[in-house]
Each structure stands twice: as C-alpha cells, then as structure tokens.
Image (cartoon, rainbow, N blue to C red; front, side):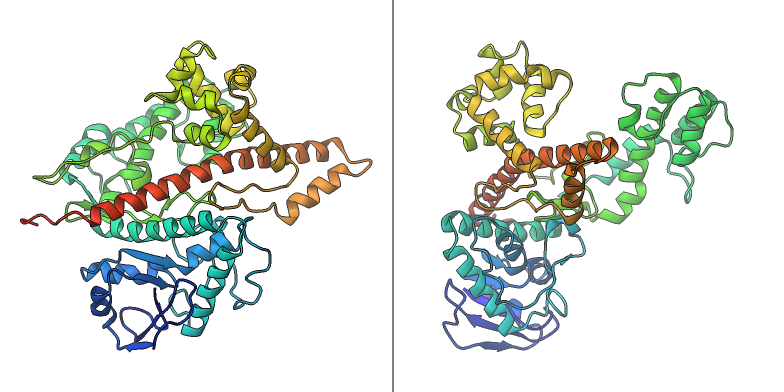
Amino acid sequence: MLLAARGVFPDDAVTVVPCDDDGAAAGEPVALPGGALARYVARHQDERWAWPDTATWYPALVERGVRVLRCHDLRLSRAILAASGYCRPGVFSAGPAWRQGQAHPAARDDAALFDWPGGEATLGLDEAGREARLQAEAIRTSAHPGRLRLLVAAESAGALAAVEMTWAGIPWRADVHDAMLRRVLGPRPRGRERPALVEKAAEHLRTVLGTTALNPDSPAELLAALRRSGLRVDSTSAHTLEGVDTPATRALADYRRLARLWSANGWTWQDRWVQGGRLHAEYVPGGVVTGRWAGHGGGALQLPKKVRPAVVADPGWKLVVADAAQLDPRILAALADDRAMIAAGAGSDLYRGIVERGVVPDRRRAKVAMLGAIYGATTGDSARLMPSLAAAFPRAIGLVEAAAATGRAGGVVTTRLGRTAPHPGAAWRQLQRRAAEPGASAALAHAARRQAGDRSRFIRNFVVQGTAAEWALCWLAGTRARLAGLAPRRDD
C-alpha cells in the first residue's frame, strides 16, 4: 500500500510512503515535487493507494489520464469504522482530534463524515499514517474483520468509480432534450420568464381559483387561494393534497408537473450540466446515512422519464441497462435466511412468486405488502396484508419487526457488513423521558409516540436498505475491476 499525504494535489508537493496493510511504514518516504504525483501513480497503478479523500485527490489524476485500480479512502472509511457496532468502543480515542461534520462540499450533514483539521486534502503525513494504523486496528479487533474489510474496500472503490463517472459523463443529446422541452413547455423563454405552456397552466390555475394576481410558486399565496376556494387544508404539499380531487387541485398538479420539469431539468439545467454531448453529474458516495449514494447537481441518480430519451449511446457504442429487480426484499430474504421467501424470489419477479404461493391475490398487493413491511406502513393495504405476509415469511417479517422495536426503544442496528445507524440525539431522548414522567400531558405523549414511530420506521428500513447499498457497492467494485481488465479497443 502507498500512503499519500501532505499538500494539495496537483499543485503542491506530495509525500508518498510505502506501507503494509496495517498502515505501518514499509519503506522510505518519497518526496514528490508539485505536479509529479500523476507520473508516479502511473508507474504504480497496481498498488493500493491510501489518501485522505478520494473526492479531492483523484479527479486531477483522472484528468491526466491516470487511473487507480484500488484505494483506501481514509475519510469514508473512518465514517464507517468510528460508528460501527462491530468495532471495539474507543479504538479511535488516541487519534487526532478531528471534528465530526461535513467533509466534502457535496456531502450531507447526516452522512456522519469527518473534516480533517486544516482542510480535507492537507492531512499531514504523520496524521495520515496514524489514521491508517488506527483503522487497521479497528478492523482487526472488530467482531467481524472480514465483513468490515470488505465494506471499506467497496466504499473506497465506489469513491473511485464516482470520480470516474463524473469525469466521463453520460452521453446526452442536447437536441433531443431541447425538442422535448419545446414540445412540453413551449419555446425557451427569455431570462426568468416562464415558458409559454407553463404560464398557460399558471393562468388556468388562477382562473380556477378565481384570482388574477396569484403567484403559484408562493406557498403562502397558494394556501390562501385554496382556502378561499373552499378547501380546508393546512398545507400546499403534494402529500397533503393527495386524494383531494377538485378542479383546483388538478390544475395545481398540472402546473407543478410542468414547472418542476422546467426548473429541475430545463434549459438552465442543461447549460449547467451538459458539456460536449455529456451529462457530467456529480456523485457522492456515502452521501445518505444508509450508505446509498447521493447526487450533487445534475440529478443523474433520478432522471425523470421525460428526459431519459436524451440519453443516447455514442456512435458505434451501446448502452447496457441493468436493473437489480426487487433488490431490497431480496436482501431482506437473504438477511433473514427466510427459505420460503428466497424460494418465492427464485424467478425474475419476486412479487409474482409471492402471488403464486397464495399469499396475496395479485402482484400489486404483493408489492404494496412487501414494501410496506420494509418501510413500516401502518395503514391501507399494507397493514391489512401484513398478517398474511408474516404467516408466509415469518423470519423475514420477524427481522424487520425486531429492528422496528429496537428503533422505537432508541436502539440502533448494523448492516450485514458493518454500517451502523446513527444513535438518536439528545432531543429525542429528552422528549421520550419527559413523556414517560408521571403527569405528562396527552400532547407530549402523542409527540413522543410519533417521534418513536418515525425512529422505528427509519431503523427497520436502515438494516435492509443499508445492506442493499453494500451489495450494490460490491457489485459496482467488481464490475469496475472487470471493466479495467478488458483490452482497450484499437480505435479508441
């Protein structure tokens, strides 16, 4: 393993130290002048590199045509190990006093990442070496060293892939995108004006609500107008208005559909994220607390169906589309070792397999029931079908119910490979204590029950979604390694 630290690549000098897998120095440090790291890495591509932050260090290498096969991302790995229930408590207590917080501008606060003092890319060589050794010790002394070692390797490989995916981009036909926008929204407007068809939808909404001065993008004005029209609602959110079928709510839904397309994936979005026929979205590994990726601009993780036709393979190439069908319930079946549910998912459609076993009458209900079990739905078809699901798949349903009970009590769960859910905060525990005191008000008790219910649903989902994210990371790392082994095309 080669440990790179000190300096801000590519401009500053960088020091590289050969290390063993435990982070101990195994050779003399190599001092590289500014700009020399790319050439050095190119000569040592087969080595496993360790550095403070892939998102900071790797882009400049990729831009220079240098790829790294394997790395150990100290920032992402510490976020996992410091919180993991598999690790021995206090293993990081001797480490540098790094503050917990937002380590990458695209990372979410709840991702439990870490800042390095002085900046994420300027970790000193001694501190980097000490951190590498602490992480190796945390894995070695953990309850499941093999699982954690696989998890941090997959997380680090994902960080490499994210940088490469941002740099390479997605093939994008701007002309196809523009034609769709003109067809759905009207011609491109000037400045901040609404496109013609968006403004037409706004005018229709104003007419239905009987007002000429409404700004449909103002929640306050919109709420007042809805109330004047006779709707007794407390919010203009889609969730609040769901199931309320009136001319006003239909007109509002039509306006929002068009306005959302214009603001989220319209011409301004195209100008910002599409260059040279490629969509260069940004990906954030570990950006969600469960370990799923997040996106920072570009929205490539959730491209709306309307704009997907603009994704067209380059001439002479083909797009390969893969779908891990019903991944979360399949992961649940494997986690629980529920043989009946595993058998139901032996084919390509797990929901159809559930129907064929007579658990529920049709595929739609099978999907509703299973997702309800994973996400904690307590009403509607999900709740009514839960007894049948529990009878058919007792181990799987028992696993998520046990996780839910743990969450309701303020506990945490850990994924298969070792990512642990965050503990509830002090405010959560304080409310639960106050509600349990003699003489607590009904309102306080209700708030505590609601808070505990939210926590329960989060934890029951965490163990499944987090393990599914680990599976996806391992698949991504394996696919990336196999692609790297393919011989390059002669006409590249």
